[in-house]
Each structure stands twice: as C-alpha cells, then as structure tokens.
Image (cartoon, rainbow, N blue to C red):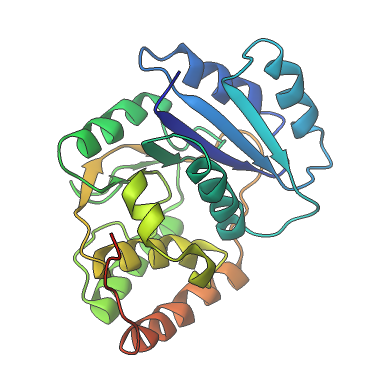
Length: 244
C-alpha cells in the first residue's frame, strides 16, 4: 500500500505517458498514480490501460468525455483520493516539466510540517529550462501580479507541481473552486492560505516539455488575469473557518 497518490491529468500525451508512469513507479518511495484523461483522441488512455496489467492496484485511470479543463480534472482526482485512504495527494504534469524525482522532496516537506508543498520555479532565482524568454517573463510577472493583488507571499503562484496533506483537501470546499485553467492553481493556493494552512515552497528546476504540445492559451491567461481580482474581492465575503 502507498499513502501517496500522484494525480496526472492528460489530453493527447501519448509521447510522454508511458515514460512518466514508469519513472514514478521506479522511485524508491512507493506512489500510486491516477491518470485523468479527457477523451484524448491520440490513444493516451489505451496506453495507460495496457500498463495497468503491469501495475495492478497501483495505476488507476478515470476517463472523462472531452476537454473539461485542468481544474475540474484535479478536483475530480481530489474527490477520488478523499474516498480512499491517501495521506498525501500530488498534482503533476505528464510532460516531464515536473521532475518525478522531486515528488519525494515535496512529500518530505509535508511530513516536516507543510500542509501544502509547492514545487517552486522562483523561490531561488528563476529555475526554468527550455522556455522562451517571453514565456518566462509572463510567468514570473504573473506571480508578481498575484502577490500584488492578493497579498500572499508565494513566489510561484501559478505552479502546478504540488503535494497536499489530506486535511487541506478535506477543508477546502472543492465545489466552490471556480476556475478551470491556470487560475485554478492560484485559487487553490490562495484558499489554502486563507484557511490558515502552512504553505511551503520547495525549489525545483522546471524543464519545458520536449514532446507533445502545450495546452497554454490566451483564454487561460485571461481567466487568470481577471480571475485574481474576482477571487480577491469575493474573499472579503467568505468565511474561512476550519470545521475540523
């Protein structure tokens, strides 16, 4: 048995999915993996299902009809994890931009007192490989903008490589999380901080995908830009009391 579940949303990741799954299962620390595939037409789900024979009881897949957004995939995965006995629940991309070797470091941070550990690109300078300068600047200044509007101190506000202690996902009302793109990542961090959880940044090196295609779009970026203001304003009218 493992106390740790890695949730990986996929859409057309046939070039990466087998390699990332095998890499996670090669680690010393035992992890379970849940793939949430949004109807990839390239056969990603079939590759995962063929690997389930090799990793019974460790590799799981949930298939959804069509692209429904990153945020809804993770919330689906969080609810799936909460119905089972996982103590540590991770978010990770399928494309190796997040190094699976860092999973153990994020888990260790949570064992040592973090409620939410974030794999941070910006906590020690700018640790990004293979990104064009425009994308680096956009991401870096997006985090500055988030800090300015929300007054949270997280250096990498849009980071998507994370480990949650179970209590965080039990406390945050997941049905009230509004955003589905990169703003989802900001909203989850902001909400965890508002509930008083200890959020820690763990420095990682982020390497842009070498295979497959990025899902970033101007619509996703616009949602994040405007969503941060909406999120901050609506927080003035919310109660962030822990029920536990």
